[in-house]
Image (cartoon, rainbow, N blue to C red; front, side):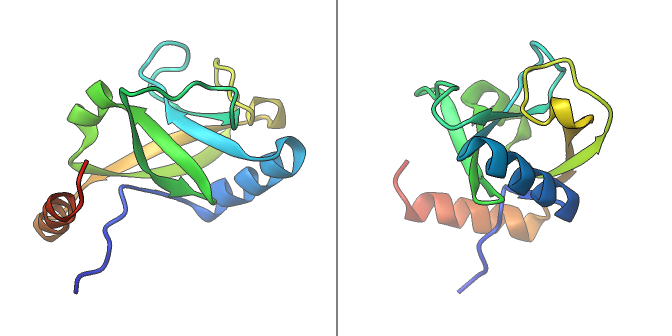
Length: 128
């Protein structure tokens, strides 16, 4: 049996910020922006205040909160592992971390051949 390959993870600093925001706002969700307001940044919203649709893909969870991306954007990023970090500075979007003087940032790396094979096997084993 192979280990599950995660499509998204978060740094310790990002997890700490998620916990702080969750304490203030309750359950959250993340959606990778496609470039409208803040480039291609991960946006953090109160759960239920951002409408997830049929064209959104659940990549996984960070800090126990779901992380989504549009299907069209996923087509470009499907070969990468996303690492969500937090850095000083304000983004120009509506993400909940902005009042803290920080912004979430997506870093990425290409999956290894072994990771891609495991993801393909996992996808074939579960219906979409």
